[in-house]
Length: 284
Picture (cartoon, rainbow, N blue to C red):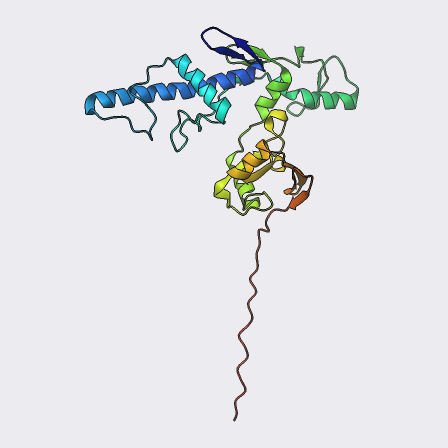
């Protein structure tokens, strides 16, 4: 990243990153900006017909005449400064709920490369791919090509821009947001916030990547934990650290270096009650 001084008290902020990340950032900002402009147009029509003012709790301002690029720039500043489009959003987070969309085309042989390489290492094949076995149940081996086709072919973003094969495979098989089944599993496992001193229930939780997805952390059970918003922010914005020890056990380390172990709450609880006292013996 870099800054560049401009005239009239302005500066430019530059960012170089992978093509998929830049396209995702631009797509999310564009979706949000268009949602703002559509709401502005509707608010202007409503104001013209009903003569009513703008509701501060809704999206849309009849007086907002910014261009799409201007709205995009302001939304980008919002997100970079506050972590969300807070200066434009509704109280229920209508704009914040918009997620980036990146379309990727990945050649099938690129996805198969890891399996092909392992098979080639076991058989000593190199340079050319071969198919062995009965029809319909063959095994593909080789590291250089298969059926005369180069195995490692670049993926493409929508529009034809090539991206490296590692990124293409990650985008094809990984998802940042947990699917419904994984979310249910984690809510059952983490029936409270997983900060060791917190007991807020799952409905208040964010599913946090223990190792950030930006640093290669996978969206899987062993790298996710439910945290309330307060402790989610604490993990990312303070010197508190957390790591997964397996079986859902988290180890928290304080800024002073003290460690605290937090185990998933037991899914089974027992209530023990004293039986009714025996009747007193009859005097007869």
